[in-house]
Image 1 (cartoon, one colour):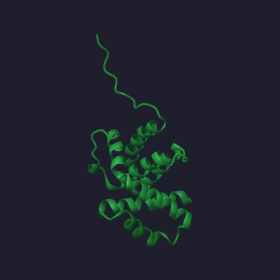
Image 2: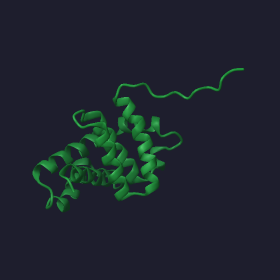
Image 3: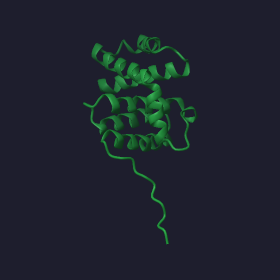
Image 4: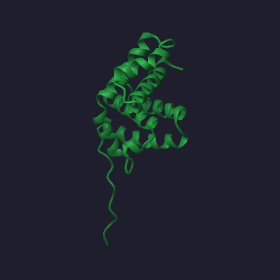
Length: 149
């Protein structure tokens, strides 16, 4: 596994702990890295920390952005893993402009495939595809009204 993938997985685990156990961000990251820190180098842990703490710091804004794209799915209704993968990817799309959009989406899908269900991959991909358009500066697609007769 690549260092960046490992960093994203560590960040996801910290987001999950913070979300599900209502643990402060830094403490959640420390809990996760006590175990993972043995196989991750300092650069990998620094990237994971930036992703996790950055996403947690902006969680309300990220949730609002995700919610706009997730028609009929409240954040609370989503599986905890799926919700946190979306937060992580949305943060990276917003804050890490040096990382290509395709890489962020592909990594999110692979992580969902590992930690969630195959059905979740389609759900996550659809939402991230919409969020990708926001980063690209393209307007969101509007639903077309049926033609008037």
